Image 1 (cartoon, helix red, strand yellow):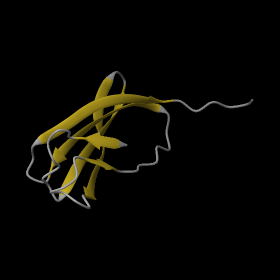
Image 2 (tube, one colour):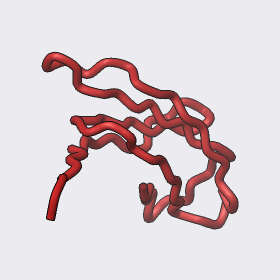
Image 3 (cartoon, one colour):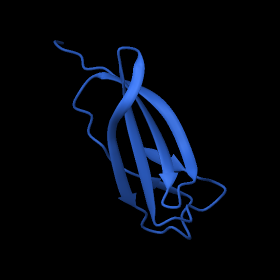
Image 4 (cartoon, helix red, strand yellow):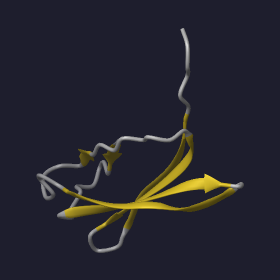
Length: 83
């Protein structure tokens, strides 16, 4: 995942990622994650990795360590079988 805070700098040592999964049409808490920012005062973006092991609709919301909302989005994970 790519988090872009341009033109502002990240200005936080860590980001908190709240990941929700849609279950029966409603987003429910799935995982809470924390990532360290390598250059918080000079960088305006960061990457973090997460491996999705289940198909489905997900929503992630990203906060700074100081609990300032930085980004939110949804994505759909689909696994294809066969060729």
